[in-house]
Amino acid sequence: MKKRNLTLMMAGLLAMGTASMALADEAADKCAELIDAIYVQERTETTDADCAAAKEAWDALTDEQKEMVEGEEADPDYFGRDTGDASLDDPRNADEIGENELLVVSFGTSFNDSRAQDIGGIEKALEEAFPDWSVRRAFTAQIIINHVQARDGEFIDNMDQALERAVANGVKNLVVQPTHLMRGYEFDEMCEAVSAYEDQFESIKIAQPMLGEVGEGDADVNDDKKEAAQAIMDAAVASSGYDTAEAAAEDGTAFVLMGHGTSHTAKVTYRQMGAQMDELGFENVFIGTVEGEPEETACEAVIEAAAAAGYKNIILRPLMVVAGDHACNDMAGEEEDSWKSMFEASGEFESVEAQIEGMGRIEGIQDIYIAHTQAAMDAE
Image (cartoon, rainbow, N blue to C red; front, side, top):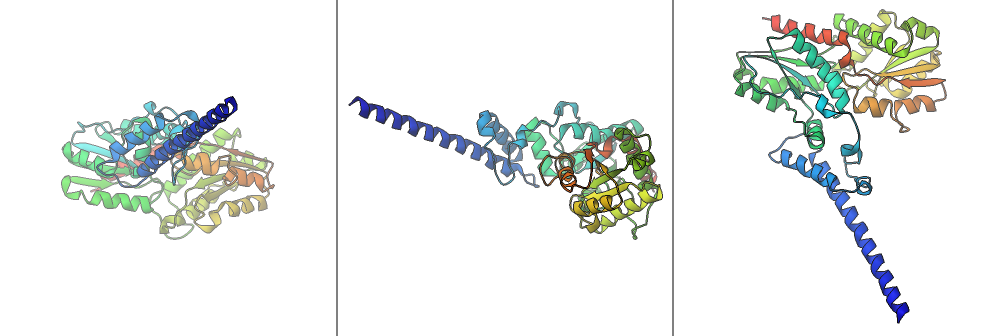
């Protein structure tokens, strides 16, 4: 009789354990569903509530359950990854703007440190340069806005919210300064969003992105590209320990600048930046892109080119305004498909290092945006 009771007790405990595991799985799956629901590019009437629900579900999980979160887009890093202190960032979404607004438009990033240093660095520089204008922020990536809101409780305006805020505050003169690298898809979409509000202001002016006009041919460069190329190389050399790029080249070291890439006709910009680097004498600079567009900027092609040129040491650095997900994961991550891992796996190089620094924190780059804003303000 005792043996039968013990068997029943063990079976009961096993059933309880199985049920507990099932509940844990269910809770993790529910959290993943809620994360996937806010991993969208459209803001709706339920977005705020959906963001709050996702965070509440995450906070209710145990550490073990958090590791089980997995969905179409959801994973434990969505809420669990430490990207810095969000409180150090200013969302610049205050009212009482006044008649003159300078709206700084960025794609955005969920990496807190990068958002404060790179995007925030540009915004602060513009604020100091134009004290008579209220500097405000807009992100074009609702996915990122939702991520930051859900995880950190920081509310960042999307384009419509920012423009509606300007209208509600009685802004008369609006200058829009994109932090985009080039006049690609993001720039086009931003211009389309602004055009819908043209009759709401006395004047609207859109400034150039960092690299200015695209140009036509591969070697079609301009002063913006020249200044940007010089600024990023000055920063790269300063962080490398070398005195000059020439000294790095003599030591067998090349710099690989990784951009995003695009299928937009503006992809010629990457070739133009390569031509600009050559024109400035930076022969040990190679430009690549995450998307591999243009074709010669794919990681495999850059590895082949750098190896064929005889370089044995590689320094990776983002050719991006923000050192966010692409820089930390696609460029410098530990996964086998990251650029750092692929360069190492090629067996062609003795060392591969990464500088995780966005262009937005470079003073010379900030100066380009200031000049573009001034030009827009001065335009008739």
